[in-house]
Amino acid sequence: MEAIQQALVVMFVLGLLGATLYWLRGQGMARFGAKGMGRGAARRMQTIERLALSPQHSLHLVSVSGRVLLIAVSPAGCSVLDGEVHLEDRQVEK
Image 1 (cartoon, rainbow, N blue to C red):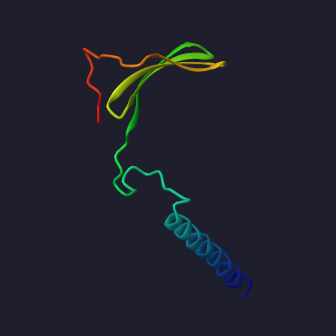
Image 2 (image 1 turned 135 degrees about the vertical axis):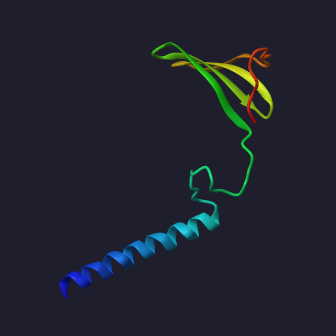
């Protein structure tokens, strides 16, 4: 009898959690990150390549809305090194 009661309590808690996640998703406060899920919104930002220069410094090649940017990252912050990078030997995937 005690095992049935515990199972019912666990099912109730899981159902409550599922209902809360469903409500939060409807309000736009929860998103599920699986690739097949979502509302078909196209990604406008994509990391093309990352180059580590030291443990705390790196260069990032990023595509944002069709533009390709070279960004330097350091403990002091981020800087855009070149506003538009031209890629001759590599195509940016969309």
